[in-house]
Image 1: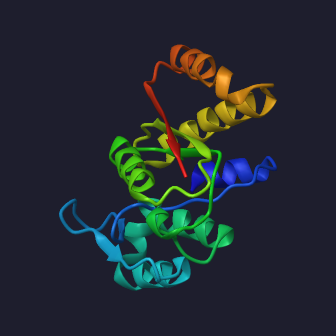
Image 2: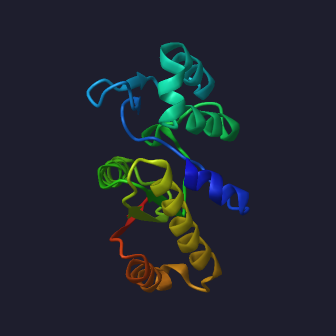
Image 3: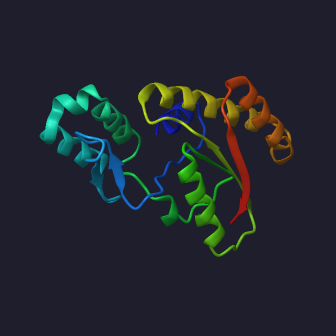
Length: 175
């Protein structure tokens, strides 16, 4: 959602999704996550965590993150449930990238429209989320300025990989 927020503020048309079966937020211990259904609003998650342990979830930044998220949209959405079609899809974790590839490959292909699926692994903390948002925004800006995105994308991603010292995965899928 940090990249979503960052890109939207720069005028890009952005949507964001989860890809799991539920929304999982850090809990009081690594083996005790807070799990919510996708129908749960960010406001409801926020209120639930305030009741559970306001100090903990303030200190670890989860309440701040949920506050930001609820200003962007009411609730999380699941990628596998959307019928929207995109030109670019970014993921921030290889596991999610794999889930998106699988979802796109198993959908009935109607439009035969190409979509570029790009993964930049981002650790799940505020500092890395901000850095990742900057990198994703740079990539999107370069692609938007390209005269031929489909032809230029490999060179753009290779240059960003070299500059940022991070591996970027890329594949083409179809709707």
